[in-house]
Image (cartoon, one colour):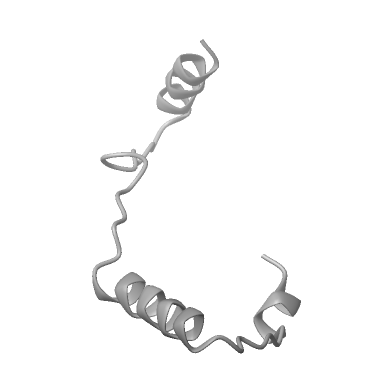
Length: 59
């Protein structure tokens, strides 16, 4: 992500839009919904395990 976007300034002149923006920020910080893309990360200890894993991944 570009770090310059963090420092962007903007002005909200409409009080209702400012309130809606603040409420959206507040709601997003309350209960973020996130789930991992995989149930677990496999730990592969041998060359054969790595080969089998890569073969499955490429199919």
